[in-house]
Length: 286
Image (cartoon, rainbow, N blue to C red; front, side):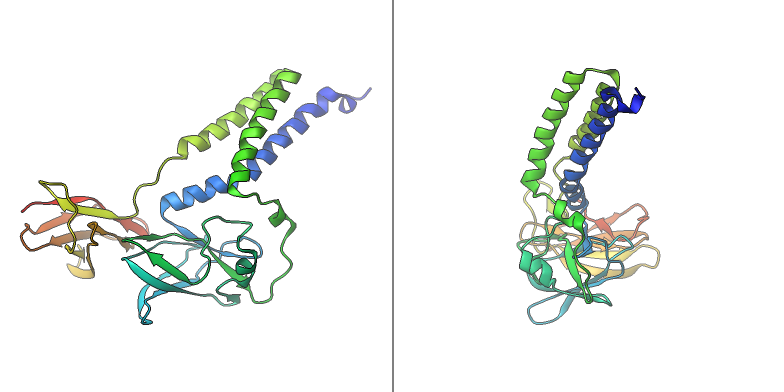
């Protein structure tokens, strides 16, 4: 009898494929968590899930004034910070429409969690806007079959838990070195996910009183280009002492000023990437 007609030949192959399916079905919820942890959002095609590069995102106040403008990178990523308030989002890209009617109708996306539900956002305090933003193609093709394989966040966690239990049972049932090696590799991958599943750092810095530790509101924070000694941006800390800047590559310093406190100047190491979130905690002395 040919070797490929035996169960011993096909069992490890089928077992390995099942492990890959479990990993694939549960991957997006962990990938989305890492994106939010980094403070980035993604602009994506609502029909294919692919990233949309060089999309222009504008954040406007209720009066129609543009507060922030950013452009997505080659992977559709963007990072945007804004103070407390209510804003309207505008996204423009040739060949695409915003807001996504497809996502509004479905009330969900098969590709991403934490999706911007419309064009209105409310920020309770200073922070990063990291919604994933869907755009509709003007001449959209039918949604791909792979979109139907998407599981909700809870379903993904349940699949990972039950799938691991089933994989352990089947490994014990067959009890071969190859099966146990496949299961061990699968567990290393899943444990690697859990090791990175940690609370994110706050997407803002906090300025506080050096003696009491209380956050300081209305601190004037100036972002200066260190090379040319040029003022780049000015912010005022929120009631919770928060601020944040998104900067390009370069050398920067911060100047902190508040009546009754010593003026503080902080030099930063060279920033080597665009879209860097410049936000650190500082204490000011009276």
